[in-house]
Each structure stands twice: as structure tokens, then as C-alpha cells.
Picture (cartoon, rainbow, N blue to C red):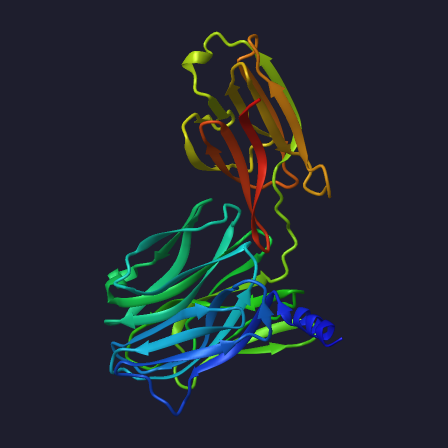
Length: 417
């Protein structure tokens, strides 16, 4: 009985997403002159997998002057994460408060670009999930030589990379000694981007936004217009009713002029990405008079003109506009050999998920041609890993849902009888 209760309690404590508010620096403490500290922030439960964690600065109070403030996440576990702050300069950092968010889902990608010294205007970062289509940025660290005037933006998001630009009005990019940020990318369903808000007054109060189920409301600073001659201050205050949310950003003295994003982010994600399924297949056997001049295994993606006839592993992204997906495979064989093949035909079937064939070579057959045609349940980019060896070709598909999975969709092997 005790064991059963323990299992039920453990299952109840497993979480898929979490959020919280953490004060890092307090009003009666000054961070400066190479002081550093590490804060352990605990989740409300235990994640099944290491979650993605990102931070939103919600309150700051920093002394004027050429200072530097460094922040980074140093470790993430199933139950907590560590945030380290360092204040290298003599400029005093009085208060800092941040909101943190954690999510266990591979449809969300978080790229950490903490504490970049002497940043350049444009930086490209690789990412893993070809189906991410939107993204947001969270400023985490800053160091300056003088007045600041910049806005961070995503200038390009492709199937394999994201480009972050730092605007450079009045050639002030050189005044940024150090900058840190996080990039959060997601599939189309995840983000509802409401736009940017530039604040130049002493206080700003937003309109009322209708509350959204299973979504976080994010308001991250991505740009500053700061002359560096007064305390850099901002604080966010949120007012929530049964149906709306509104926020005010102000300060104790002078609110820093800035630009922030307004975004709804889903933490419950419904779109499921599944491997390609076999729709139809045509197989032909013949005596190819030119076979001796051809490789044992030849594969082709005819819609993108990609050929694979060398031994190795090749990663390919099939564009979502290509449907159905055609894959042509030719296997050269000889007397005393057989070819076994299998193709993924049914993701949801409990059994008989594969279409399986066996073919035998003889003196009249030295080549077998496979022309499978695959379809997808939804329109999405298809990430394939094609592995060619001396006697076998295997194609696996990588999909990102709560977890990343790799599923075999094609396997053809030349065997001895």
C-alpha cells in the first residue's frame, strides 16, 4: 500500500511546465566590484525531462555610469535551476527581479546567448527543429561604455538557423561592452505575437488584454534608449481580472526609455508531428545491363534533386510544400542474395505498423527498384536521416513533440540466402 501511494504521489508531482517570480538582488544590498552570487530556484514539482528555462527581467535598479551586469543560467535539473550574477565594475546594481518560465517540450527551442563581449551587429545561431516558425528574445545582461540606443530583433528564421540583429542608430553599437539574451523559438501554434511597444514617457499602462487559456503573457524588454546619466530603472506591475490582464511599467525615479515585446505563449501545445506514412509503393525487378557500372545502393529524392549513392549518413529536410514525398531506391543484387525491405505505413496502428517485402535475386534479376510514396498527417517540414552502408539503406525521421523521437520509415537490406 505504501508503495502504491508513493507511485501515485510521484506521478502527481511530475510537471510539464512551470513559472515563478524570483528576486535576485534586494534594495538593501549592492552588487559591484566583482561580486558574484548563485541562486538556486526550485520548480513546483519534478519534470520528466530537463526543461527549457528562460528569464524575463521584471524589475531593475542600476546606478548610472559605465557599468556591467552579467547573468546566466549555469545548470538546469529536473527539480531546480541555478542563476549566477556577476557585477564586475564599480557601478552599483541595487535591485533585480525576474520572472522565470520552464517547459518540457521539444517543440520549444531555447538558445542561450549569455554575456557576449563586444557583440557584433548580426549573429547567426543554429537551431534543431525545422518546424519552428516564430520566436521572441529576452534581454538578460548588459554592459556599456556610454549612452545606449539599440533594439534586438529576429531578422531571419530558417529551417536550420536564426539571425539576431542589434540595431545601430547613431553608431552606438560600440557603446555596448557586453550583452546577453535568450532566444525562444516555437512552432506556429505556440506564439501569438501582439507586437512591440516603445515607451518614452515616465509611465506606461497597457490596454486590457483578454486572458488566454493555457498561455503565458510575456512582456520582455528588447531595446533601450539610455543616455547613461541617471539610474536605469523599470518595474512591471500586472493587474488581472477574471477575464483580462493589464500591465503598467514605471519606476521610482525615471523610467528608462525602452522597447518591449507583448506575446502570448502557449504552454499546452496540441499540434502533434508524426512520421511520414507509406501511401503507395511500386516495386519492379529487372535485369539491368548497366548494373555493373552502378553502386550497390542508389537513393534519390527526385522532388529536390538529391542523390545518395555514397556510404555515410546524410541529414535532409524535405520542405513542407513537397507532398506527397517521393523516395526512389535501387538495390543491385546477384544470385544467392535476397533483399528484405520494410516501410512505415501506420503510425497509429498497435501492430502491423510496417509494410514488409522480401525479394530474391536470380540470374534474370540483378536490380530491384522501389518507388514508395509517403504522405504526412499535417503540413510540416520532414527531417530525415539517411544512412547508407555497403549492403543497407535506412531512413529515419526525426520528429519534435514533447520529446524528440527518431522513427524508421524505410529500411532495405541486401542479405545472403
